[in-house]
Length: 259
Image 1 (tube, one colour):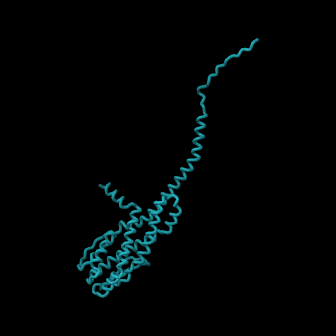
Image 2 (image 1 turned 90 degrees about the horizontal axis):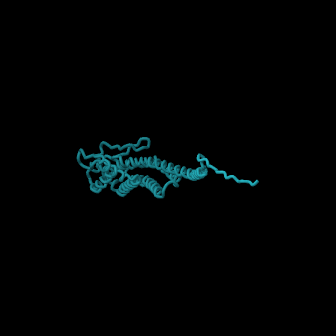
């Protein structure tokens, strides 16, 4: 008997899922996750470290900016009047007043004018002293060490700004201390408490002692260069600190938004 082949029709189950594309997708995603996630995590850690360091730095330097932009100094106009004009000025305007007064009255013989000039200069020196105290309190050495530690997360521009500021602050401490030669005056004395300069003392008879005031005027004239250098380094600190915070542009932006 001859064998007969019977054709069998195979019917595929339509409910059966082809897992191969899914397995390939999962494998691909796992591979990407293994490569991308550690990289993304590293980048996030770098960003967080950089952000925290920038917050720390701005908080420290912000103390300096706060003094420069909010503190006002009482200026008294050099005059022979019994009630001379007084006004509170930001230190930049204060410096301009001192420059103008010195130019006008450097050869004066009026006791009141000499005294007011000296008082204004002493107040500027005290402002400089306050700034030195703040710079000392923020610990520039620690800032330098932290900058070195996080240098990889910072751009070259940011590093240059930070190191430039540190150099300026260090220079300010040395220059302002060296050129403050006005602590030898006799009519106005500096008052210290626990080695901290807290104010100024004035002798009651200062106006009647013309010779003492003349000696003090001589101290001012002999230290004209030091007064100029003190003013200049203060202006540099102000300029570079504001530049770091982009302070002037931010203030301009706030004024526009307020209008």
